[in-house]
Length: 106
Image 1 (cartoon, helix red, strand yellow):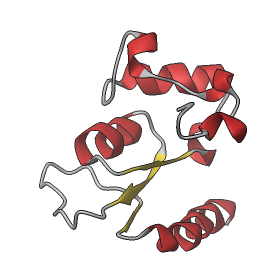
Image 2: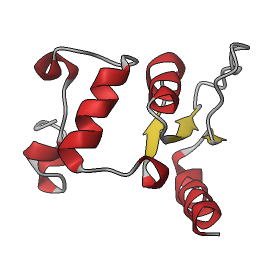
Image 3: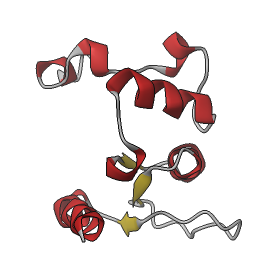
């Protein structure tokens, strides 16, 4: 995270690494730890991830909204967990977030 310069925009206290938590995605406890630490509200939380099993399944189990960055053009597995939105390019992220928030505001 430091090499990417992420800490320039995100405080280190808001960065969560599985190895530090003792649990990893898709374990719901990883998501609940972040939810509690940041005092998040499930219905106002959007998780963006590119790993279907770890990100989509885990965040949906935690009750969060999920945008799947499907840049690898993979099919959604048939086990019933679906993201709220699926995009294949970062340029589509802004409109997907706007759509999720506008749906929740109605």
